Image (tube, rainbow, N blue to C red; front, side):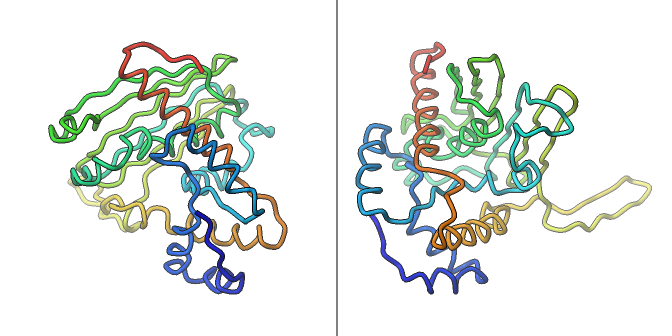
Length: 265
């Protein structure tokens, strides 16, 4: 579905992130729980009317992405060789949501698949995933997993391990380690504040942020800025094809769990 919204309303939303987020929710095109074939069919409809569309992939506009604007463009730490991506939610969603979510890979890990493609600089050609239901047995009864490990491998041999859990127990746990030929880049968790207490018992800090709207508030602001820039003629930073590619990885991971074998793409 395409929503036609006057440009001035988008520009007004650039400096107020809550209306901007509500607007962005109307413009989401990341396929999510949509099957890949249906997402490909929808692409023709999406572009037929030459409407402006944004693929909402928040991780790319988070702190690591801001520092590493082009991961293949002569960075001081060399060329990337492997990735470790960790994504653990604070607590599992209610069963009513799990039932319609499309599963852990399409609902949750799909953001990690997109980040992996972008940082690796090439598409994975092999996907192997293992999953279990260790957090909530009801999730398993609904045919999903709540704990998963996925290994991606590219044609050149680059590797990425993605760790997902529906429950961390200590907040919104989002970390990335990118190992390269001459160093490493790491994006760590974000705390509620920078306050620390130092004593003879050690160092105590604040809690991790506990919700994705808090963690990615600035990312959403930047997405709205980017969308307004697109209306001025700037190209989209993330395209519809990126969303479909991440969806293909999610479906491959689901098939790998089902078959117990790696899936070639």
